[in-house]
Amino acid sequence: MPGGPLFEFDRVTVTGSSGVRLSNIELAVPSSGVTALVGPSGSGKSTLLRLCNRLELPTSGTISYRGQPMNDLDPLSLRRQVGMVFQKPVLFAGTVRDNLAEADGVLDDDAYRAVLKRVALGESFLERPADELSGGEAQRACLARALVASPTALLMDEPTSSLDGAAAHRLEGLAQQLAGEGIPVVWVSHDLDQVNRIADHVVVVIGGAIAYTGAASAVAGSSDPRVLEFLAGENDAG
Image (cartoon, rainbow, N blue to C red; front, side, top):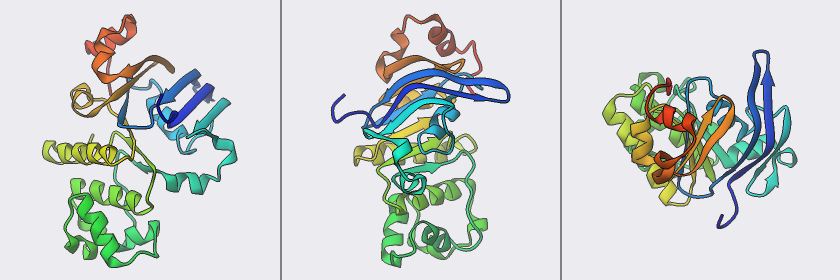
């Protein structure tokens, strides 16, 4: 693919106390746009995402980030390059400014205000106590905190699952905007309608294996019966 893959998985397997969670994964994640990871509940899509910034480690196989083996990269440095927004927003005690400073305490308030504007939060939010934010505001503040570190890629693990429709659509738009600005986004979703709205590329994970990878516009044409069954909604897509 042009410019090489963002992440490349070579025969990656992850096992745990409950058995095999991912099996012999061969995958190249595109280095542009929004890539959606979808699949039934427990299929391994969140595990796959967490491998992308070493929040989990493979039992066997290798993973590369922009052509560099992850084993050669410092985990903290990698996580600054590869930001992550979790399903439930987790903010530290204190103000929104305090949270942004945790990611980069060198920046001044003008830089923090610029990041808040980027995620559609007004500059007054700098002084807001983090525990007074609504769910949508807290999730956008978490995204702002990730962006303060100037990431070159962004991972999002079902970030809208607990948000109302308006807040979810706002976050989707921000992800598409970031991708358009050159920050590729890898987004785990259980919502196929959402995937149709935001994704350029789709990876379908079923039973710990890759069942489809390719353009979002072509996934409905897959010949794999597992993918067709999942798309038809016969499996739980959570």
